[in-house]
Image (cartoon, rainbow, N blue to C red):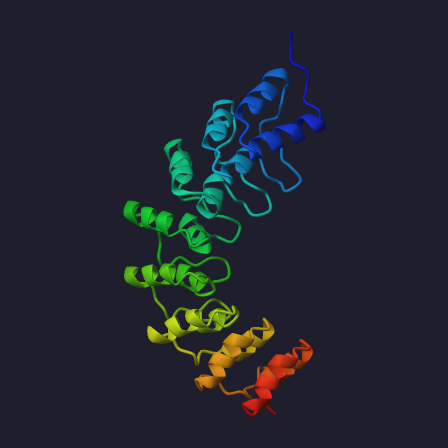
Length: 270
């Protein structure tokens, strides 16, 4: 006797079981109903993607044995399960998919590969694994012209940056907007990150194509600590103007940030 087709509530139950690592529930549901193994949830995720992002290898294995597409992409980001594992999961999950034939050279909608995804999530263990296999490109650029190093600059993990430096990353690289490491780091309220970049020789003088300084970007993101660090160390001109004629003080006014305005005025903003 043919199994009845799954209803919407059955799919809800199946996605929930995959997310919660309830393998027996997954088996029971798929035994009692006919499911489309590539059905997407409201986030455009397949069942395999849902299990992968939570390191549920036993559920992943069962889904693959029942026809799940190991290269099935999330339409919005063109993210395969392997790329999802590089960002969300641990090394063992990534290696499991690799052992099952997943394409390690897959790229997402921004032309980012597994190594870039690992950098994005500060997954140092996976980065080292990919380096050991030779499956990485230190100077790869995504659609915005960002290399792994440039992406790492905006992250808080100094360990990831140190590792990339050890590998020989170009610390002076800029993206297609001419944003360099210091400018991107200034967007985060992480003074230690900025200090490290200075220590290894990253320039604080690089301007974006819109002639924005690191201080402009610190103000865009309301980062008082970073702005103070840049000013106290004489790294920026407090009255520098962008192509549109905006100073850091103009940005602070637009952000209604009283603390930033006070800081900038103390350092001579006009």
